[in-house]
Each structure stands twice: as structure tokens, then as C-alpha cells.
Image (cartoon, rainbow, N blue to C red):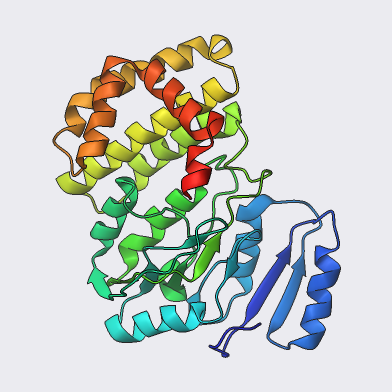
Length: 305
């Protein structure tokens, strides 16, 4: 409502919120005619909420703001300026605030990259995979919707379906979106074997099958993301103390990781990523064990966010 860019339609989806969110949204809609509220009768998760909004969106461009995040007043104006400057179908910033890290970039620069560049950046973990902090031309989304059956990796799947249709991607550097790292109920925080260990890898299987067009560069990048997703699966098995109950799947992931390590040294990865690959080759178990200790036991990721 406080955006400096005023020509907006604001679609709020109340996905069976157990608190007063729905009533608050309705009160806001009475204050601002740009707001439309949709109430789900059955909880559909974030994918269903986003799909409801997409089904009713009429604007030329679409941006998503997750329910536990927030944006700066010039968020939309900045992304629209990137669109005007580059004439690209997607605009994004490489950087964002977190609820802990609040330092703005010292110097901004707007550049243009190709759809393949963007997908490679995502697959090599050089760019966040989330669909937030971005502006998509609605026509390139078309009939694409978020997969309600995807237990994890829904943003990755959506991007691999939509990004190839873009003419170009405009990229800036300013931080205007705040990603909340304090929400302990977030789906990314809780160990869940079915969703994170199995679901994330399953989504990568789907992406491997449907992503087009493809070439050697993109195949390598996709393989690296599959590699890191397998590590992610091991991480959640370990965090949930579920390795003994999923021995065959654990062995399958370990075999895949060790087999793939040599390939990663010929990919577009930096020295830190190559060192990580080497530790995986020596011991996937110890690599994940140390990562879990560092990230969750010592809380280093949260401290450095």
C-alpha cells in the first residue's frame, strides 16, 4: 500500500489463516480499492495461494511477496525501472535484506543477462531460487502454475518453466526485499524427510525431464544443482535422525554423490565449491554432519545472514 509506484493491483490470499489475517486483509481492502482479498475454504499451501493470485491477476507484470517477508517502499518502482532500462521480460535484484542483515549495497549497476545465464546462476547457487524479489511479465507465465504436488522445490520448478520464455533478464543490485530468517515455522527450517529429503530430489527429477531448451552448459549446471539437492536430502535425513529408517535411500544418495564429484570439477564452480565437492568425495556423511553442526548447532548461517 505504501509503494511509491501506485499503479498496482494488490491480491491477498487468505489460505485458511488461523489468526485474524483474513479480517485484517478485508479491512485493508475497504481502505484501498487496489486490494482484492481471496479466502480459501481449504488450506492449499503457498503454491495454492500463489496460483489463486495468478488466476485473478490482470496486470502486465507480477511480483510475489511471501507472507512472512516485507518490501521497501520503492521495491516495485525499482524493478519497473529495470524493465524500462533493459526492456527485459523479467527484472530482479541479486541482493536482498534479511531480518538480520540491513546493509545496503554501496554501488548499484543494472545489467542484462540471458535466460540461460539466469538458470545457470540459480543452478550453481549464485542467485537465489525464490520467485520473490522479482518481476515477471505475466505473458511469459501464461498458463504455468505452481505444482501443488511438489513437496519441495516449487520455486525452482516454476523458474525452469517460465525463465526460458523470457527475451532477457534485467538485473540490479539494490536491496529492497527483506527475507525473514526469524520465522521458526517456515517450511525451510523444519526437518521433514518426506518433503525435504525425498521431495526436493523428486522435483529435480521432474526438472531434468522437462527443462528445454538444453545444451552442455545448462546440463552441467542442472547436474550441479541435483548434486547439491542430494546433499540437501542427506542433511534432512540427518537432522530428522532418519538415516537408519531410510538406509536404501541414504545409500542411493551417497552413491550418486560420490559418482558425481569428479564431474563437478569441470563445471562453473568456484574454489569453495570445489573444496566442498572434495570433502563430499572423501565422506558425504562427515560433510553433511559438519554442515548441520555449523548451520544449525552453532547457528552460523543465522549469525551471518
